Image 1: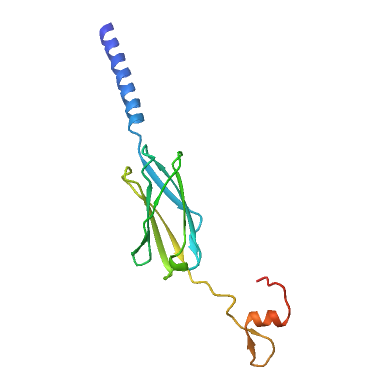
Image 2: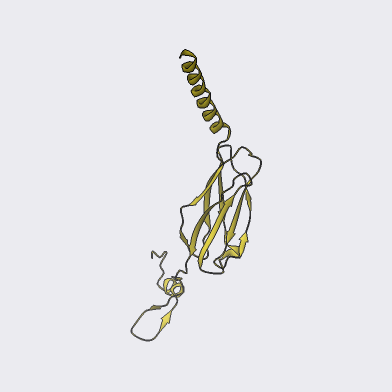
Length: 158
């Protein structure tokens, strides 16, 4: 009876040790990406941040940026710090996004099986400085720049 009790105690101890050490030595690699912006104008930039959990710090994170048609715009490699954090500021191509719609950024790392992605919308924004201002009941219209200059305003608060 004592031998059986000793054997069972030893077996439980070994199984406990194996289950805890194997989970430590085979920690799951992961990657996450996020942004505070979900909508931007065609001339805005978007700032993305993320976290990667891997042992190979010398291998960067790969980002892929897709336009609303599924065409790839950029695929930069971004380094991360010792805590696994990375940041990237994405400027629109040639100063302006060509199309409005939903853009996708996918983050990946060669040592992580899954990817992480975010989406943001580029929306058309009315240009406040190309509208005209009526200064009387007549059909005369002038641009805001001419209106402000003729009225000697120092600044404009929309």
